[in-house]
Image 1 (cartoon, rainbow, N blue to C red):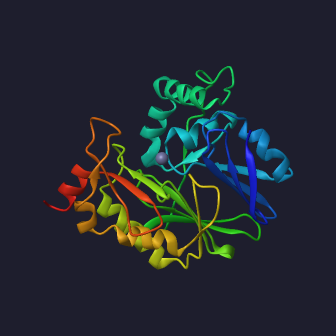
Image 2: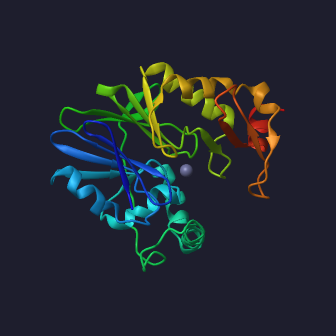
Length: 273
Ligand SMILES: [Zn+2]
C-alpha cells in the first residue's frame, strides 16, 4: 500500500510498502514523479487519481533498485546516462531475488510477476545548462518551477530536484539521515562533500525531502551533516560490516544521531594518504 503525504499543494511524498519514498510534483499543466520505489505496488495506479489526467514524466534519481523497480508500471522513464549501467544491474534477476527475500522478511506482498516483469529501457535525461558547475535543466510544470541538477555522489548520475517556489531540495539518496556512500559506483566521500556543499551554497535551500525519510527537514540539517564530515572526522570512522568486499566505515557528524557510511579505501586514496 502506497502512503501519500501532502507536503505542500502540488507536492506529495509517497512511501511504498518497503518504506522508500518518491515525490510527486505537479503544477497546473504537468506532473513529474521523482522515483518509482521498489515495484512492490502499482505506483502508476496510486498516482493517477492525484494528477487528474495531467501529462506525467517519470524521472529516476539514480539507478538503484529501491528507486527504479517501480519503472515496470510505466512505458517511459528518464535517468542520467551515467547511471544506465546501474539500472541494468539493479533491474536484473539477482537483485529482484534479493528484494523478494527482503519483502518476505518484512511481510510485504509482491505482484505475482515481480521477478519477471520487464522494466522499460531508460531514456537519457538531458541536462543542457549548468548550476554550481553541475549539469542542470529547468522544468516548468505550470506555476511550479523545477531545477534538476546532476550531482555525482551516491552514484555518478545522481539527480536532485530543486523546487523554486518552496526553496525545497529533493536530495534522493545524495543525502539521508543515514547516507550511504559505499556502493562501488559511489564517488569518494570528500568529492561528495564538496559537490553537495557547492549546491547548498548556490541555492537558497530552506527545506529538504530525501528518499529514506517521510517528513521535511530544515535545510540547515543536511548542511550541518555534510560540512561536519571533515577529513579528520572521516579518518576516525569506525568499521561496520556490510559487504566483505568493501572497507565500509561509519562516521557521525555532531548530534542528531545521524550516520554516514562510506568506502574508506576510496577516501584514503582521495585524501592522498
Ligand atoms: Zn541509492
